[in-house]
View (cartoon, rainbow, N blue to C red):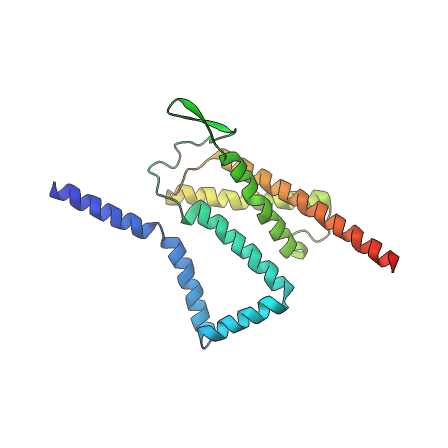
Length: 204
């Protein structure tokens, strides 16, 4: 009885420490970076505020990094430990899944699809020159699919290695499809803005 209680206490403590581990690590690295490169936190905040107000590229990078961290927090940092991360490799492909022998409605597919649409748009918006250069539809879609596929695959492999969540082919597919849709939306928006700028120049 005593040993069982002791095992439960130790397991709960280790789980409580393990779950926020990566979040704590990231915050610690950021804090030490600020402490090492600035004489005070106030100086760091003032510089950050100055860059944010004056530099459009800095604002774009901030939004891209912020959304990327949100994805990592949802898919890795804020997940419970799974005893068997390959228990459902195929995953969910529709709006219903079996639970205790019954079909239940699930929005998992739509969430995985929608998660990477803003990510792709922000990434291309911020790093257009490095990622795609000349904005052609085929190149935009190829780069979008490739980047999101690699990013999503990295997340799935980390889930498998760290036992956080389950490794699922459906997640990989719908995340990548979200990247494709995000790339298409970015291309349409870029072409519409480009056409509008040409019309304004011609009018003047």
